[in-house]
Image 1 (cartoon, rainbow, N blue to C red):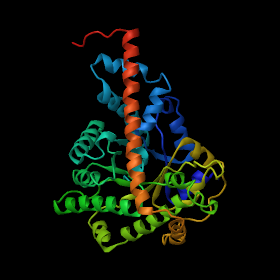
Image 2: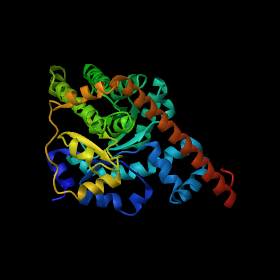
Image 3: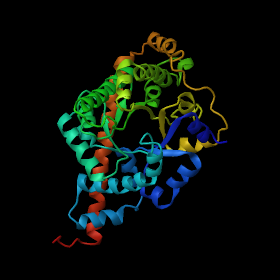
Image 4: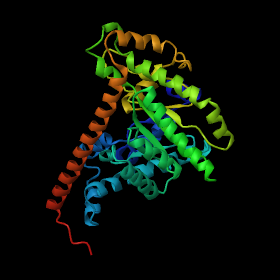
Length: 367
């Protein structure tokens, strides 16, 4: 049996960290669902930037939307929505048979809004309404300014994928924002079930300290942080506060492992996937990691709910001069900046494509 199937059977959802029109048109995404146990997917500005820039697949759609007067950000969101609603429809049977636990796709609000609470909330509500799909998660960064938007979006019934979380503390802040939104729905007499995942980024920790710690600590920080976060998540979801919400019909926010592709060429191609195998979690992975996982026959032990030896490992990093809290804040800030750069690149690509298409086939005025 493939390790992808084993992981699915152990209770972890495998999502693809990619979306392109070619994946949809070629049937490859459906093949991943059928053969590699994929039950959802995530997207981000970098993924769409590469997809649109590196192919002509989107040119006809761009030209059509230009003829309708669309441009820039509005044009992009229509392109993205076309892809993600198609993917959402593919995953709908999974979403229905799991009663809304699985079968999700994710779309991110503009990264330019990461530090703007009001605009983030407005964008999240608008995008979810535009999609007309119950299994679309709107990605909102778990920044300080994003937390109120997360709470308000959940209260408004908008499913949320909290992104750019790097530490236990950042996760807990996002989880409590989600829980406050659910508790407010209960108080208001609203249905307390609103889907959500909290995305904790893993591999970027190891990239950040690769040249700053002894060789014996190589590729261990991201996993230790994830174990610490998993321990905190397990405790929170078993707390009296959450049990009260369960009793009133609420559903927990699932922990999602993001950035799980191996960056170190000397390490296993499924380093993070194998280390973070845990029931009732999600692992969203790039295609290369997904395919690599399918070639492995086993997984090893499941992630311990008590965090295992994470504190011992983290103490070794502290002794090596790594300030975990400061680095978590830095990684979140750099992550937001990286998405902004990809967003700006994406807007430039769309503008360039639009100019090229206009030149080859001048647009007629829209009546």
